[in-house]
Amino acid sequence: MPPTPPAGRSVAALVAVLLACTASAQPGTVEGTVRDDARRPLTGVSVYLSGTTRGTSADASGRYRIASVAPGSYRLVGSMVGYQTEVVAVRVTPGSAVRADLRLAPAVATLSEVRVEARADRRWQMRLATFERTLLGESANAEHTRILNPEVLDFSSSWGTLRATARAPLVIENRALGYRLSYDLHTFSASANTVRYDGDEVFEEVTPASAAEAAQWAGARCRAYRGSLPHLLRSLIAGTSRAEGFSLATVASVPFRHQRPAMPRPTSGDRLVRVDADGWATLTARGELEVTYRGEPEKAAYLRSDWFRGAHRRPDDRQRSTLRADRRGARLDPRGTPVDPFALSTTGHMAFERLADRVPRDYEPSDADPDAP
Image 1 (spheres, rainbow, N blue to C red):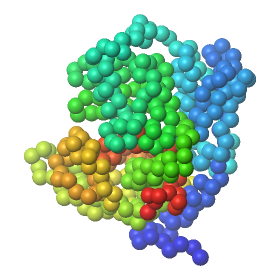
Image 2 (image 1 turned 90 degrees about the vertical axis):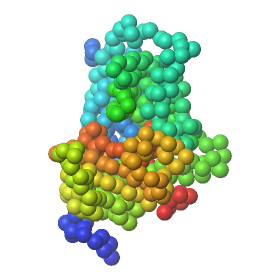
Image 3 (image 1 turned 90 degrees about the horizontal axis):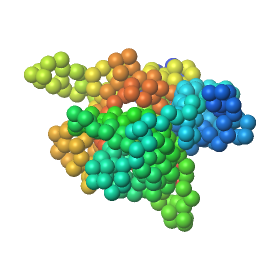
Image 4 (image 1 turned 180 degrees about the vertical axis):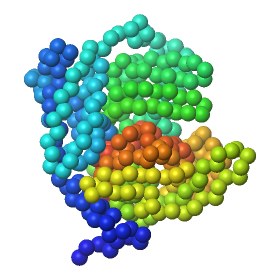
């Protein structure tokens, strides 16, 4: 018996969702070669799909192959010390074999890149602390996450903005969720009002020391996923956002500061997201989208963070965030990942959560997880 369409969801939209579910069950592959500027094969290059656990290394002939890739839009990354990281966009369709060849250029060392600030230098240590707090976050998970090779970082500061570059991929160990990440940092800047960073990471699951630790990590991963932006976007595509604990309201933009802010107007996912027959979707929200999740915020850290104080709200038992989409809308793949990572911006609880609270794109919550609803 087919499922009953959720309220407000059209039959056409439901068909699109069912097609998307069918597509996700038919994985594809991504394969190709990695060469240098002289077209010579490069051996040992790390090749991965950003934000996932899917990655491999190029063999002696420079060939690589990543199998069992769910349909979607990905950033394919080729990374090796001594070479500039190469990133290309790939789109995997059901059952497809995508060919993507990479060419890595030698890294050009500059004076600032070969200079290593003393680890004991107080200014460098202060900048490192700000960088870690911004990139990893301030949550309880961040307290158990650390960068294992901070010496590859260089910092600069001007006009109140901290900038960072990395001479090699950052190795990040997250003992709260049981992951080790290799993170290629592309850009980073942080000021009192704006945080902007971009990078590509591949997740590797850490082997738990015991069954108890494995269960602890399973519960922590589930808690990290619930209420996150990926959770919201997936539920919007599936038409299950309300059932999964999200309440949505739109707030029209006010052109002049002296005008009274507009009142939030409750809305639903089917008014915000158009799902195509192939499972890809477009999220369009005029003004701001207020997102409330039934989960309780992490009060110990969140309520003292700038992301809460900036909202001028009193503490409550819900996670509250604000989502802004690009004027043209945000294009989403079947798993809810924005094709353009800067097409969506968040404030509130979703902005508070950072790299230490992130699970891989290919993470799937299980009914067996201790914290699954």
